[in-house]
Image 1 (cartoon, rainbow, N blue to C red):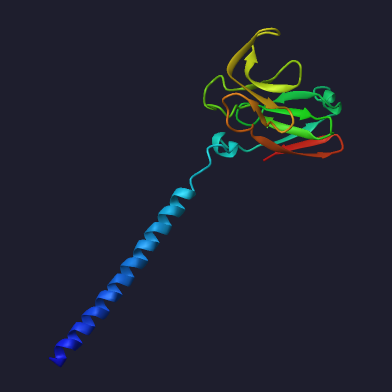
Image 2 (image 1 turned 30 degrees about the horizontal axis):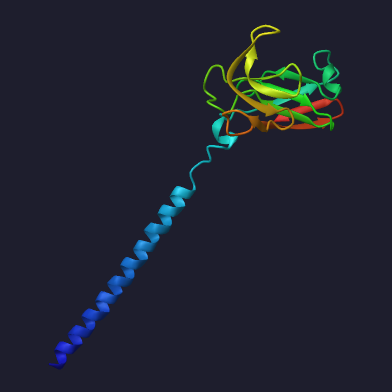
Length: 173
């Protein structure tokens, strides 16, 4: 009879040990699952929406093509990035380099942004001629920083870094 009690006691210890191990495994699976689903890319981040391409452009504002950039409120379109870059000299004397690829359906052929002729904002679409604007998604963005004003886009325009040394600008990512 005594031997039977020892055997029962050992079975209790083994079952408690098994219970503890399965509890630890359950917690590990739960925590791993939560970590996996919390680390998905943010679809609202333009870094995840717009393809990443290397950008390293030098602009000499003393050249006739870029001389207007010395004045605040001026902008130019330059090649580079995915669909081009808008380089804007803001009234606070800062320069902003914005990707011309709209963040709403960026792989559509028409999803390219254009500065409106009144220079107050950027809109998704293009001018067919000087007077006819062809809309794409019609999202509107600020010239300063490319922040979303209105439209179906959910994220601001991708912004590139700009450093200035005298009349030389370096645009890079």
